[in-house]
Image (cartoon, rainbow, N blue to C red; front, side, top):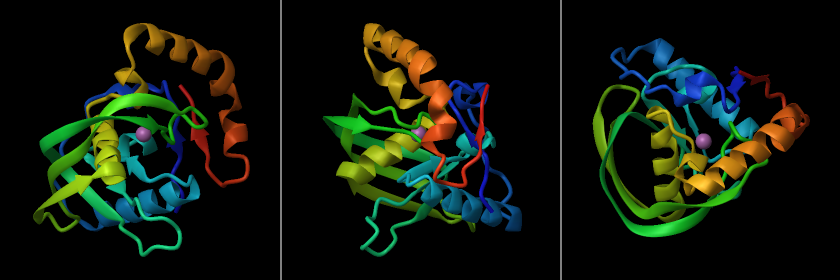
Length: 182
Ligand code: NI
């Protein structure tokens, strides 16, 4: 089932999300629905707050269409290591059509639980590392434009409010995604 996509600056996107405590069927359904929603929006990652659920989980699939899926869910994640600072052109399903170069890291070690509650570790580089950090920051109530320098950030926020925000439904017009605004 496709889930509603919450669009910046909806307040749920700036909340610190709560830990997941129940590893049940409902959680697995949520993960499946999040995956369907992410693929419909052609995203490489999606965090639960972006579908209106303020819980600490996200999914990532950084494979291209020709490659086998690398879809994984990260529940109650912890960033164990981040290094190799890099500038990356990031975008977000909650800020559709907006891409900016931001500072991030190209090497990450993450620890998280899977949908059964088992803990695992993953070492990631390049796009995978960037996507993990991007999604992780959604759980702490932050979006990628928050990583811009203050002056750039306020310009981008003005540009978003004036030019992009209102055309969001049009951005997703060829998809079945339904957007929730502030
Ligand atoms: Ni995002």
